[in-house]
Image (cartoon, rainbow, N blue to C red; front, side):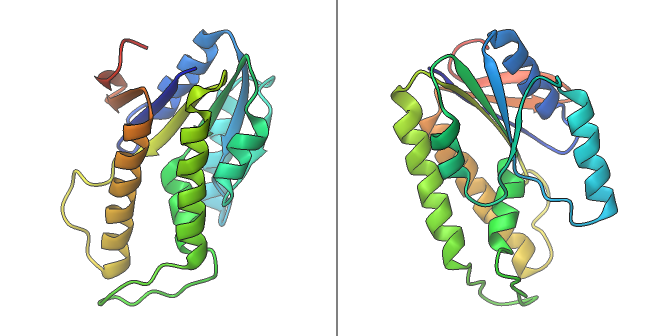
Amino acid sequence: MTQTLVFGGARSGKSAYAEQLARDSGKEVVYLATAQAGDGEMASRIAHHRAQRPAEWPTVEEPLHLGAALLAHARPGRLLLVDCLTLWLSNLMFSSGESYPDVGAIVLPELFHSERAHFLTALAELEHGECDIVLVSNEVGMGIVPYGAVSRCFTDEAGRLNQAVAAVCQRAVLVAAGLPLVLKGGPC
C-alpha cells in the first residue's frame, strides 16, 4: 500500500500527473472530489476535470468529511484519488459561513480542527492497509506573503497540512510545469 502526495502550483500539471499514477496502477480507482461549484466559473472547472478522467472511475463528492470518506471507500486492490486537499481546507474554513476580519487573529471553526484531525488519523490508519491513496494539493506558500488575515491564515494552514500529509505518506512529488520531482520515496 502506497500513499503519495502530489503537490504543486496552480496549473502545474499535478492533477494530470496524479490521474496518470492512478491509470498506471492497474487498480480500481475511486475519485474523491472535494470541490464545490459555488459559481459558474468553478462549475466549469469541475466539468473540465470530470471530462479529463476515465468515465469508469466513480466519483465521490465529499467537501467536508474526507477522513470518513477515505475509511468508507478504502478496499484491497483499490486506489483512492483525492483532488484536492486545499479546496477541502477552504471548505472547512468557510463551513459555517464565517466572515473573517481583514486584520487580526483568525479563529477557525471547530469543524476545521476536528475534520483535519480525523483526516490525518484516517490517513495514518490506512498506511498499513491494502489500498493505495494519491492525494493532490496546492503549494501556495512559494509566493509573496498574502494580503489580508484570512489569506495568510489559509496559506499557513495549507502549508501545515501539506507538511503533515507528507510526513505520513511514503512518497511526495512536487509537480512544476508538468514535470514531477520526487522529494520523498522511490520513483512513481
